[in-house]
Length: 241
Image (cartoon, rainbow, N blue to C red; front, side, top):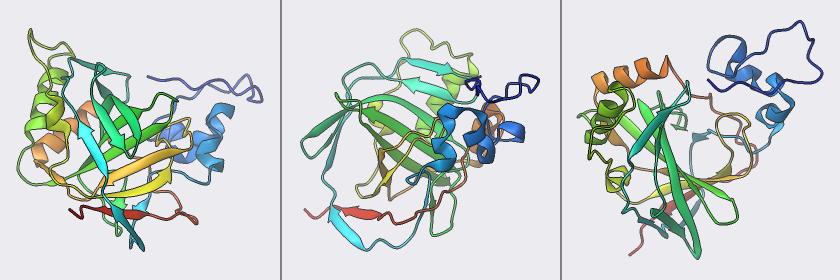
């Protein structure tokens, strides 16, 4: 489990508290666990958010080029991460971001018009300058997900992929174009800003059993509550051609 840095102003008799999703380390306390986590409570562009009406529309000009399979799944005690070798790219205009890792939240972190989804996949990308772009993919209850099934097989085997097992990067791609874009943050400590968010409009499906399995493997819900939108705009990306 990730342990927070010790706050120098903390009473030395106080126990060190790890961040998490319940108890003393729950999201409402993240900003006070460490000076390094202050942005979690003081930031003005925090994620996730509740996505409502979009007053701006743009051409959905993002391009996925996922060709290299993931071969490693690891756990940090809170999440299991699917790590990708170099070679998978997200192109936004003239900027190229490489896919580094993916992880699931149960239930979803982003809401739409007050509604939460069963799960949310985060695809974390970084460009050469260190800027982050995260693609969020909702999962609604429905038919089982082949992607989730493949991931669970690795996790339930003790994070040891079978010989020759590779998670096809293409299976992580959204099924349909269209997204919600806004300026936000990481959804876990240290809650760094800014992060360019692309939350895909069209949910994939996941079965109730798969949701239960993800929840059990995560040790319970691992979603941060929605944060104030403030004066930020959410832009709807649509395919115009």
